[in-house]
Image (cartoon, rainbow, N blue to C red; front, side):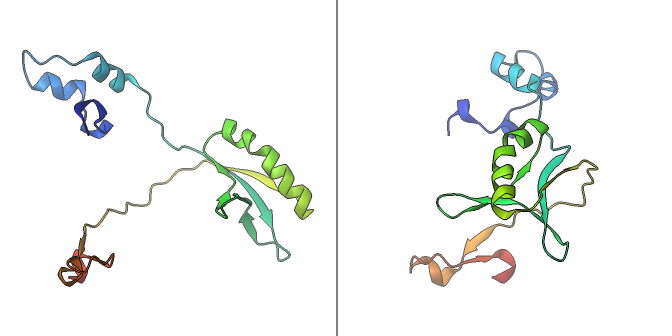
Length: 136
């Protein structure tokens, strides 16, 4: 990875640069990155169906390679783009789909990554069996 392709989190903010003192000038690219609006999920749109017991589930399409893709969007424009797929599902299943908007965001916590190390006895064998630090 070159300096030109650094992850956004690695680019110092303008405030951080000003703390470095004289002679440090932010580049035009750095200024542009700081001014770019950040995307934050504030609402979720879902196409929901009910089964015979009235239990709800998310409608989904199946891709040509067999991957199940739920009809979930993070803005109204994307939900609108999913409407033809939702209509096809409704036609084929003969069931009504509801378009649901969820918008009361509450952050409940975080899930931090754990460093996964290969087990010492697995390294020389070339196995893909990995263990977390806690398992070693």
